[in-house]
Image (tube, rainbow, N blue to C red; front, side):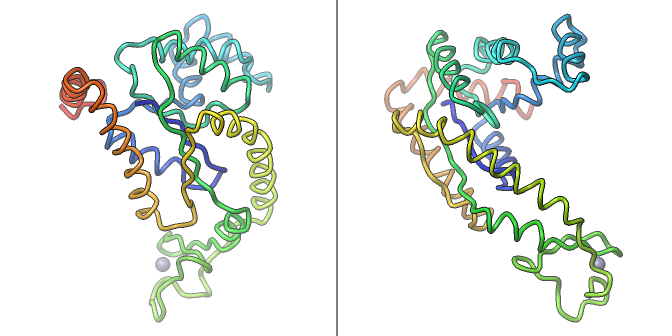
Length: 242
Ligand SMILES: [Zn+2]
């Protein structure tokens, strides 16, 4: 199965996608990782990307599409990709659809982590760190222990307030650019909303339900081929534990 995960910055998308990657043996496609990998390879394209990034410009859609095609066309990753942070806009979503079609694949599920701006703000402004032991608390969601002989009020430090302004801007940019992309997938009836304000574990259980249902469906339509391929990948694939 191929999955996309959406969520505003600070929604805990990374944590959830890591869970999914290890449980379902998927390949996480994040554009940041792809760019870094190409830069480290010092390929012709990598050198070009380095100069673009150094000049402060954005990498063009063309370059991004080439990198993404290299993953989608890779047989090892066929139907086992989770897209994290991509597609970011409507034209990328349309292009992704074309690419998947070219390699006889499709998106099976779009997970949308929903967290209100208010909660994101509280996660940031409520965050305190103990200057003695380094433990992180939140005065709205995760209070330090009462009568602790380490993490007491006087030594808990807050982060700078300018982080909040940046976070609000990033949230608003996310909402604005993602709305047309979500519309695109809504028309294909692929979106499942997840309450990102729940406990991490509750969110994971919910996501797991959706993924398990899709796996079961895929198994039912192509039983042997799919099961054997999955067993093979778990034991010998690129993410195998051997
Ligand atoms: Zn402490």
